[in-house]
Image (cartoon, rainbow, N blue to C red; front, side, top):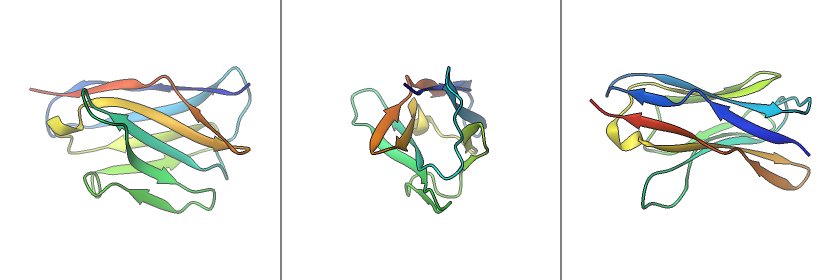
Length: 115
């Protein structure tokens, strides 16, 4: 069964940047043509959609991150490039992949924006 792993999180100062990556672990997998999304969950809040890219490469973003975050992919990985980070972006970020009618989640990576 395919599994996904996120990495690239960490602590950064306000205004800083991070790039998160999502990769398949243990199974060869191509992100091309696969609907992929990034979600985040802050303490005490519900998980929310941050960005998504459709199988046809259409992208959509939450209003709170438009102009600052970019979702992209290559054959082996999906990415979330985050610029101009704010303290309110602090959360655990999850990769979500829609595959064969199922949704697959990674284990999450922590992003902390603090001075």
